[in-house]
Length: 314
Image 1 (cartoon, rainbow, N blue to C red):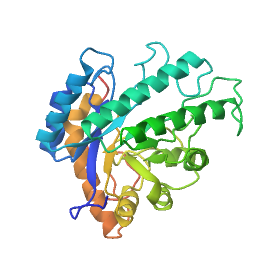
Image 2 (image 1 turned 90 degrees about the vertical axis):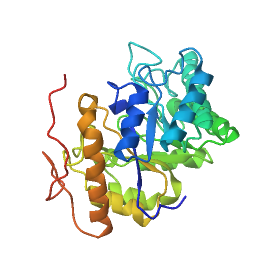
Image 3 (image 1 turned 30 degrees about the vertical axis):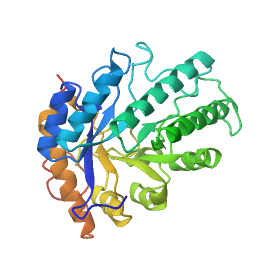
Image 4 (image 1 turned 135 degrees about the vertical axis):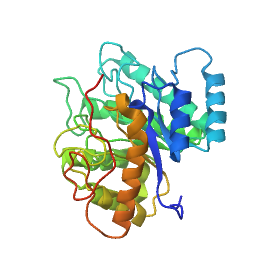
């Protein structure tokens, strides 16, 4: 898919809109000018374990179509599978029953994506328990490869792109780890969260875009302080947004570029429009080959991002 003449296509992750009903969140995104939504399947929005999932998904597909919104499906719900353990169980959980629960959930998300006509499903590895063999060929990698192969095969059968996201602190936390996994699982695409590159080091965000241009299945952007896994609004961290967005334009990336601001649901009413304005400005700056864009509390360069100052979480 080639980039549209008007530039990149932006989406907003619903994990940053948990104080909004899903229908209200979608209306806000469409009215603001977003091209799509990154739907985090969760208790707040499109609970996959609530009754009438198939009919609710069909209604959601119609709603997205009326609003002109594309979609990706995100699977990073914190407590959906276990209300007392964040992100558990995972594909690297020692308990076979736990791994089976995660795999069943991921297959369900693939079904949702297929019924919505989503561009991709994004998923990740998980954090191995202390004492687990995480070496190449070890227990954790064995479980992961088995699970990822199952997800990719199921997604292919439903015509859905399966995109794997490196997450700081998880078994696969950077692009090098993704590359190793991809050699073991043909057909796997990359869900690149460019902010994570500032945490794990290795490739810079812009270089990661260029190096993996042909691998991209999904992309997320946000600001982030170097070395700390904190999703922040544009201008509030160390991300060179013009460089990243300029790189995405240069490689003609045509998929949705999702803003993931899960820390900021309390100010989504102002941040949703302000973030879109900021990334559009950064994109134009990057396309012109001009250095960084800044903002309130930011270190990305000079100039205003239009993002309101952070508020205390209420």
